[in-house]
Each structure stands twice: as C-alpha cells, then as structure tokens.
Amino acid sequence: MERLIIFGILCLAVIIISRRNLLNAKSHGFYRLFSWIGISWLFADNYRLWFDRPFSINQIFSWILLFISLYLVVAGVILLIKTGKPSKNREDKTLLSFEKTTGLIDTGVYRYIRHPLYASLIFLTWGIFFKNPILTDLIVAMLSTVFLYITSKYDEKECIQYFGEEYKSYMKRSKMFVPFIF
Image (cartoon, rainbow, N blue to C red; front, side):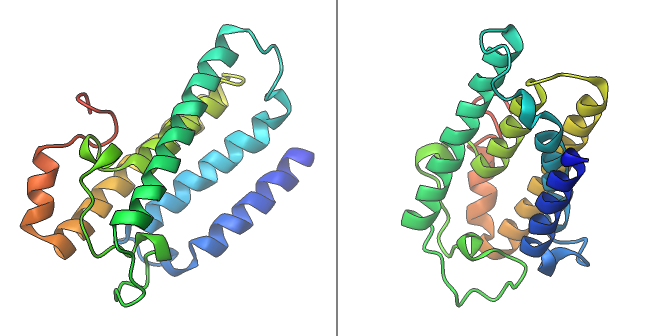
C-alpha cells in the first residue's frame, strides 16, 4: 500500500508539471510524462532497498549510474541557465521555463551530447532499476528508456523548427545520449 501511495504522489506531481502537454502528442513533453511515470514506479518499488547490501555488484553499479545521472543533470541545467538564454518571451507554452532557450548550447556537456537531461533520466532509470533488478521493473525501465528516446526525437524536431540549420549542423557533430557512442 505504501508503494502505491508514493507512486500516486509522484504521478500527481508529474502530471501537474506536464499538464500543458497532456493532450499534445506532438510535443516532447507528452512522451517525457510517460517516462517520468515509469521512473516514479521504479522509485516507489525500490526506495526501501536504496542502501540495502551497499557493496553488492547491483548496488555499486546502481550508484555509478546514479552519480552519472546527477552529473549530467547538474551540468546540463547550469549550462541551460548560463548560456541558453532562457526567455519568457519564447512563445511555446508546452516548454518548461528553463527549456525556453533562445541560444543553441554546444559547449560543456552539450558539446558531446545533445540531450544531457534526458541522458540523465536514462541513467537515473537504470540506476534505480539496479537497486533490485526484477522482471517487472526491467520492463518498466525499458519502456521508460524508449519513451525518453521518443521524447528526444520530438525535442529534436522542435529544435530544428526553432534553430533551423544551426541545430542540424549541431546534430552532425554530437551524439544523443552517450559521448562518441550514441
């Protein structure tokens, strides 16, 4: 019961944050919502095991993924705020305020990967999964990852529409989630 309460609270928060995208399947935020729901389930299902058997292979691997996730989100958000020139004047109402950048960011972590925040969520997904890898959570983690991939593809369409050829050029010299690989 406790797990369902935590999951319900997290889902409510995710729905509130994503409310502008709920009915817009052409927005990246629509698919991100489903990923966040998957991550919420993984957290609710595994939070009790967060520090269980701290030196097991699963936990060590989990913590490595979680620290990578933390680095990517911190580095990505700092660059978004400092160099992305977020503007309240940007018209797209489906974007969260920090996403309303008016300048293309291609420095720091963005030099190597186009989607450090989505990569962070992928690493978070798998970091939580490895706390207690079971089949049902494997399915949820895989679905969450697929939704983040779809999210990034829709985000790229939006970026091409806003930044044009500059973004297309950027796509050719960077990877989606993992530097030099993918």
